[in-house]
Length: 93
Image (cartoon, rainbow, N blue to C red; front, side, top):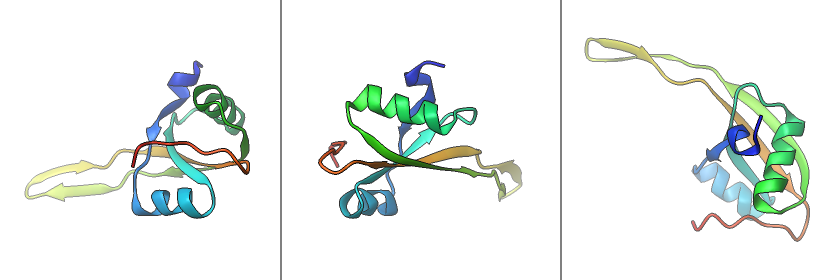
């Protein structure tokens, strides 16, 4: 798997922005089949930083309904990447 296929993009939520400021960790949406080693290598290759640890979780889809149309939310895998001291990623927000 290519490093650009592993990382789909950063997650921009209130919690992810505050984690970046406080604990130097960043949240990314990643491919469902990617493991922690692939995620670590992709982050180090794309952003030229050193990764301290990687935590992952899978957010399951939920059933939703809007008026009479039934559907469900998307299932995604989220990676919380903690960087070593002195390294940062600037997303511009």
